[in-house]
Amino acid sequence: MKVLVTGATGAVGPRVVDELCSAGYQVRTFSLDTLSQGAFPSGVQSLIGDVTDLNSVQSAMEGISAVVNLAALLHIVNPPPELRKKYERINVGGTINVIDAAVKAGVKRVILASTIAIYGPSNGEILNEDSNTHPTTFYAETKLAAEKIVLNAKCADGLPLGTVLRFGAVYGARIKGNYQRLIKALARGRFITVGDGSNRRTLIYDKDLARAVKLAVSHHAAAGQVFNVTDGRFPTLKQLIAAMSLALGRIPPRYSLPLKPVRWTVGLLEDVARIMGCQSPIARAMIDKYVEDIAVSGEKISRFLGFSAQYDLASGWRETVEDMRQAGEL
Image 1 (cartoon, one colour):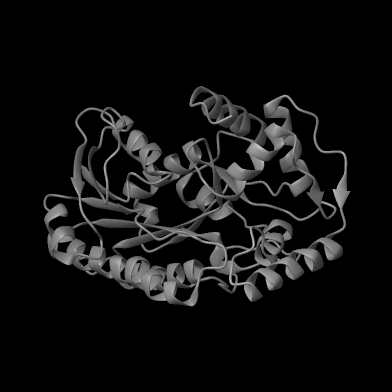
Image 2 (cartoon, rainbow, N blue to C red):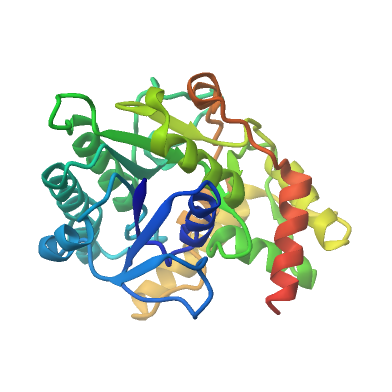
């Protein structure tokens, strides 16, 4: 089977490509740029292209049996309003192009990489695939719209074409964003907890994510389904920070700052920066994201596809720290 992976040079792309190649699939990648020579296993065919260009997508789709659509404009804290159109063009318009080209080429399965951010905060509950969705960002809104496109798509024989994988917060050595900033701050001993750390998180290590993608590519029970992809646990932020500190060989931060005064101060700095025509290095949205409670069940993918995470917080963060140190990032 030949599999097309769009957005393969992104944070999780190389892990997915490695996993598919290890499983014996022929892989073709389709991305805006290239990685250094040897970044992908030998035999991988790499194409340069943009999912917003239908002709390029159609060319890349020739001879393909399954597609893993990782191409996306990812979450940005406090994006300016004018970015909405770019999110829609890439995350929604790009998905339409992938589906249209896949149907025309006779592809049997399209996997969409989505996000548990489409649920919004858990507010003390444990959410699952049947829970209501409350996207609060351009990224989450456009991902939810893309999901509907994929789930409505049919193969020529009328069977469902798509599968949606809603990823938990992904971590690993290549993953940028909040968790990378957090691990680096902990490594430097320059981190102080805000709040009591009791809010829950839902994570998935990038190698486990790649295994879930591999299962969804060919498993007959995946067609037409939505799956949350998580490690099956709901650690508190305090437990997460402890696991990261352990991986670094450091003592977890002993002190914490009260949430309300911190958020008020951050809000004041943000407002003053706006008046002065500049951007504050920290925003209310960052604090809100930090203390957000997110508990999302990954039971369905275990029941349908037999998936279970091989990494817990301790082993996942230990490997992440080792890889980041080898790369000179810590």
